[in-house]
Image (tube, rainbow, N blue to C red; front, top):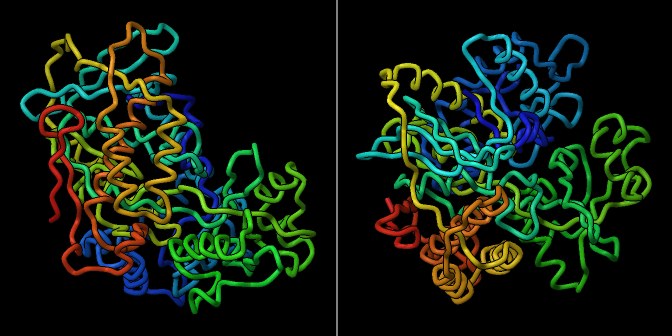
Length: 487
């Protein structure tokens, strides 16, 4: 059974523009993809996980093609492009800038012809059912009936996507509220590296409009970053300029804005050949046009926004979490592939490769009895408004962090009162998860007294060998009594 809290079409993968990275071109090698991934991860990648990703990636892509995925081609050959921090052209796209949508549609079409797979929409998973360290199933909110239903299962895989909605500014869709991480933590599972959040450098910045993602592939194709004076500024911050790693570009934009007093930076593609942007990035071009910006005629105002979580539910190479019969895949999981900073376009590949591995492992689980599950965990809800949580997370746990702000944030989130609700809505369940995840990020980021990858502390601006370890958080008694270790 595949359970979605919204429609089956609504997910972060549906909006993934940039592409999927794989060492398949004639001038590429698995070792180079591995080296680029490790370099981006800034000392925290799990080498075995990275090797699994790059070695099984080509086979996974070939299977997607066999199932009907239409990647862009030049003639009959797959078309590979390059993105920031890649040493080779190894990024595949579909329909220019709709790669995630094409992959998701392919997988859904294939799954729907299999008789043993069911789909259930508009049922938000609210908690895991656990007994003696083993996950027995889930509780879910049936939105149409406004009631909780309990589902017994021999295995549960959380593929709930990211946590971008924890932050006030994000490129993520509304469904990305950290549900999987929060559910797993409340159930007692280990959460790893949750402080490492990637802030995408170039989200369209128009007041009162969504922070629409302007893909890194735009810079890969030659877009410039300029300040309000029209000056290219990235050479002052990194030798790779616009193609520097995402965390560097995001911090550089924030620092440039602070130095100049500008409200935004500007992404400039006007020097590219006429028609190129419209044809290569049709979805991005048309979206910007709806907001009055013709990318071929004028630069787009951009600012960083929360984009991707490197951390999540700690898993092994088969998606197994620290609780028996619990698995995770995609952005909700922490496989160790991304380390402290994800290499561009590795996320879709990780979801495909490790999702398949988790599926094969779950298939080997023993059958369960038909005995019904009769109760779910107690449910209490925070009284703090959602906007306050998201603003607090953005201001204290955002791109530039400091010890006093982080400490104040997690203390404030820890001390908020909770109350039971008779008939909670999906929005109230989501707020509970946003609040939980914001607390975990703040505590882990406060404890990591260094700067590494997507985590930058203005009071500890350099890497420390003491912290070349993974953070691991687990619940001790209540939801805000946390054991945090580094290993």
